[in-house]
Length: 329
Image (cartoon, rainbow, N blue to C red):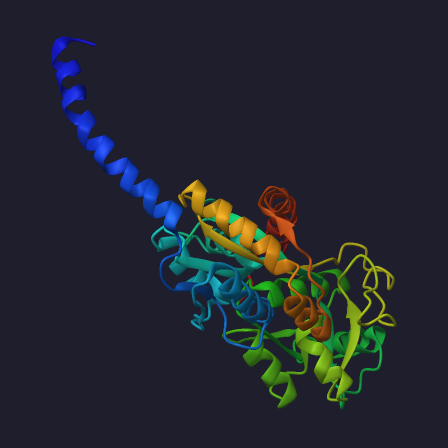
């Protein structure tokens, strides 16, 4: 270093020393005001189911309000995900989102569109739920089994309407994965989220839906809907008599709706540590456990390091599925 560079570095040192302690102090003091938890879907879906009890538990743990902010802009959750990606990395804007987080940028590339966000912009904090998707139809529908549904779809290609949370969202990818494996053509009707899609099947606008157990259980228990198959690798406790697609011969049909909490990649480490510690406590909260168990979606907590590895493996499988499906309107 020459003399001029040394003088510049020395002159800048007091300024750096003045700024860094203030930033470190702010990080240590976090949180000092209300935290917003973006849910990129309307109320009533899996992400919303995950967010509300967790937000309440975090309020009690952190001592500051945690507001659930439903961004019901459609696009399979891409709009809300992008808003969270652009937010200041200060711990005051979090994201509770679904497995479609990794799918949507790939879908944009399929259509030669620049992605509105990238997964690399986010830092995983914790996984909250991880449920296999279930195929549901109205209780009044003529299909009593999965075989009935497939046979009718083959007789009437493109006529059976199914709802989704938006193109290439979790519900869309699951149904198209099944349709491709079964050799059937269904009519896709996208909505602005899983909640509106669920309302659509209840009112007869659509005739089928892929959704999480937590959003279907009450409707099935009330006799308003019927479930035909489970996208998981094995049967689940909340629907023990429901067969898996694999049991019915569809070996490549497997899909899960997981919900997880994220922050921005540049979030300071002291705040990330506090969030991880708070989420570990929230996952053990009796109120959270009871709420999820009652809904038929038990807590599936993973801390950040394990969750990151899980996302990497699951995203690779989902992106491969999207590429197989190709462009679907």
